[in-house]
Image 1 (cartoon, rainbow, N blue to C red):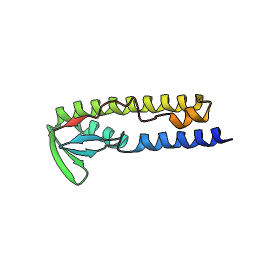
Image 2: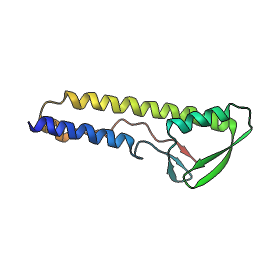
Image 3: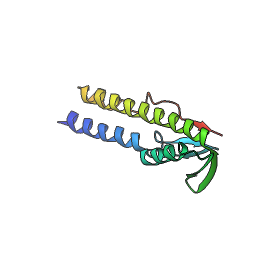
Image 4: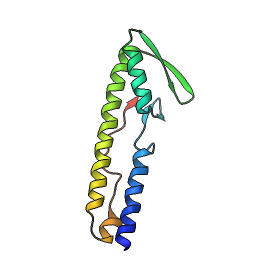
Length: 120
């Protein structure tokens, strides 16, 4: 059953796309970075601890930022991550509902994701 096989492949591609930096990234000074859920939680805790500035590691760089900015940024990033999660879940449901090989081959799982957060 080709439909089943291709649908399974499409579901896996959608999940891989969801985990890629095409989805899981924000832009800081022209470069892509990502902070996973554990990093975001830790940063939020530190930002709420009373410190005025926090050192944030992004890739090979460490940047010192005001705690107020970090708290706001983490809230934005959490909202972005949640919107991406919802969009991926919608794609998974849509893919599961496809019936024909033509529908499966023409399905675009890269649509509907929110705009990336850009920090300069």
